Each structure stands twice: as structure tokens, then as C-alpha cells.
Amino acid sequence: MSQPAASGKAIPRRPAQIASGMGPFAWARLLRHHHWRMDRQGAWAAARIALHGLLLRSLTATLDQLLYSRSVAATPIAKAPLFIIGHWRSGTTHAHNLLTLDPQHSFPNGFQCFRPRSFLVTERFFLERARTGSSPRTRPMDDMAFDLANPQEDEFALLNMDLPSPYLTMLFPNEPPCHPDYLALQLDAVALERWKQGFLTFLKRLHYHHGSTQRLVLKSPTHTARVRILAEMFPQARFLFLVRDPYVVIHSSIRTATILAHVFGLEPPDETMVARETMKTLRTYRLLHETFLRDKNLLQEGQLMQLRYEELIIDPLASLQRVYATLELGDFERLRPALMKHLGQEGNYQVSTKEPPPQLIALINEHLGDLVEHFGYPQRASASAA
Image 1 (spheres, rainbow, N blue to C red):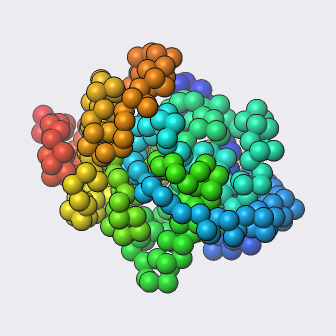
Image 2: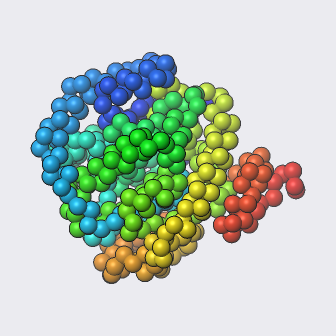
């Protein structure tokens, strides 16, 4: 398979970087389970992660536990979180970046998600060093700015707390998807309780760090299929569901998964990657949205709002005013000054999209035509129908 590129530039590999906060023993079990499949570059990365885990991460995590575990356990979650959900490439990152400009909102940043067990001890010493060190400045799939101090997906924190995660698939691109049952949390009682406790611990650590009176704004596409579980854990939680043209979303998701597999995989993806990822993306899109559409009926009025990505891009100010009013997030004027400044610096937010190939349009029509219609997007004509 040819090497992926963004904006015409070759993308360097960073094998397993997203899992660099895992514990050394969990890391070794993961590699053994996947039969130690990696190339030379992947093996060097795996060795560094294991060595740093033994020498540094275990020590700092133990110190963090000794210093803060009791205080964290006693920290209340005074305000239920706001979850930003929607399929990958639906604009969830953009919405997350805008909503976390509110000074009354807090969020997990990149450092906290990649060092979830030690950030209470290490962030003050290592965040700036990590930001100015070898960390990438842009995201590999779209050249959006990347900064470890910026909002990040909490799914990465769960992965680095040694909880099973579908995101581990990025490390092993030539094998079947990792932990698909954790996407919608279709687990037995013991595994589900372990996941809940791990997630709750991470949120309490964030509240202890930021202040328990702030509302956490969390974003992860995986949560789209977890609404029932999350609503049980946080009965007053709010959900902002982003939806975008499914043809654009599917096409962009396949490209993104291919790039991330190249960047983070312990071995490069093989020539069958795109075909396999296409079918996986179609299945995942259906699973996420069918589960969401079923479980959203469990929510009360004022807990859920659906927002089109296209509306958010055209008029972010009006869109977010409606979000605040619908989800009862408080005074929108708290957000307005920082939002206006951000939008002024950002200029006209440019959305880069490429037309899906005719074969993909036909597959989307075949497998997801009902969902395209449900969300109110026009069905495109495929080559076979032309």
C-alpha cells in the first residue's frame, strides 16, 4: 500500500504513540495476544514504551496514587458531563474546541488522556516540555492544529488506563478489530463494572484537577453507542449529537483510519487495508447510529440536541446559542467573548472534502441508504444508477 499523505506531504510513522501511557505488564499482554506482530520500527517503539513504563510511568503512577487517591475518591461530580457524540469526521472535534472555550467548562487535554494515571503529579513538570518537544504540531489526517494542552478524546485515556478499547485497532491494522464489544459496551456484568469504575475514576481525577463545580465537556465518537450506559451513570447528563452528510463522513473516515493505521501501527497496513476498512466503517456507522436512535428515547427533554455539522460551520454563533438554550447550559454570554475572539482568529473555517468514488457511493446506498434518508440528506446517484 502506498504511503499516506496529508496536504501533499508524507506522514512520518509514530508506532503505538497513542498507547504510550499503558502499564508495562498490560503492554506486554497486549503484544503477546497479538503474537508480537510488528516490524523493526514498531519493535523499537514497543521496547521504548515497555522500558519507560518500567522506569518512569509505574513510578509516577504509584506516587500519584499515594498522594491523591483518597482525595480523588472523595471528589463529587457536582455537574453531570456534557457528551459530544457523533460518528468520526462529523465535526465533534470542532464542537469540542468551541464549547470548551466557556470558562465554566473543563475538559481532558491531550497530556491527561495519554498519561491518565499520573497527570496529577506529572503535568505541571512535563506538559510544557512535551508540547515543545517532539510531539506533532498537526493531526496526521487533516492538518488541524494539535497541542497536548487542547481538548482530547477521553477514549485515549481509557486505553492508557489499560482498559480494552476499539482504538487499539490502530496498532494492529492487519488483524481483526480489537475489542469490538467495547464500542457499544456489550459486556458481561463484571467487565462492564470494571469499565464504569475506570471511566468514573478518570472523570473524578479531572474534577479534582479542574474543580468539582465545573462541567466536564467530553467528546468521543465511541460514546455515540453508549448513551444508555452513560445516562445510567449520569442521569442529568447532556448529549450533543453531531450529524453530517454520510457520504462525506464515510469517505473521510476510511481515509482517516488508513492514515492513522500507517502512523500508529506497529507494522504498516497491507494492501487490503482500504477494502477491509471500507466494510468495517459501513458496519460501524450502522451500529453507532442504530444504537443511538434506539437509546436516545431514554433521555428526558433538555438532555439531547441534534446539530448538523453544516449548520455549525455556516453560523457557529447561532448554533451554539441554540445548544445552550436547548441543553440548559447556562448563560451563553459566558462563552461569547472567547468564542468571538476564537472565530476571529480562525477566520473562515475551511472545510476540505473530497467527492467519494462511485463505488463507495454505491456501497453507502446499499448498506446505509435508510440512515441517509433518516438524517435528511439527499441520496446520491451511484455510477450503476447513472
